[in-house]
Image 1 (cartoon, rainbow, N blue to C red):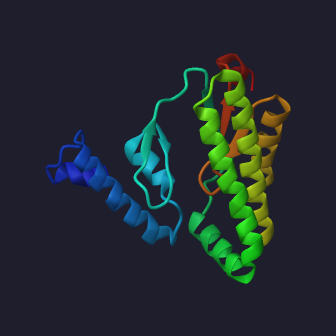
Image 2 (tube, one colour):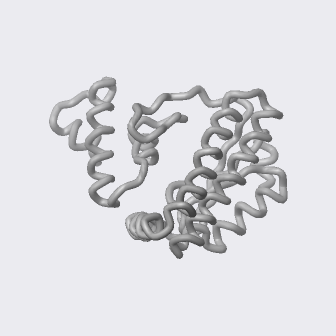
Length: 193
């Protein structure tokens, strides 16, 4: 939407400064609409490709490893992220220690994923499996803390099946019913999933 309006106003979407403006506007709108969140999904939508993203820093485009194959499973209707954010924020205020433990799991998962993303195939996919497991544990901890339905059965069915088959999987975005991303070391593994 932001890109459309910028283009209508005469901005060239191929220019880096226009993409930076689009990202800033989209992040602001996203933050106002959802009351928070990292904005990583907004950066991915605006910039495309694979990104290293951390709150408060500019996204860094990463080359996608040739060995890594990615697929998505639609597990139902999109989640209402704003309500999840509010519930998690309230729970964080009520129990900051439990919240910090969950965030520590998610932070460790992101570091492990990045490490896997930059390695060769076998150590890379092993690290990504570990990272997605940590990520799902962190989301489960946030769910237990807040009562927000971050990991409904439709999501855990997919992530559990992927794990059983030696693949890696995690919900995209805030979880709750949208997409699950599945990672494999070969297209054949992904196709069989």
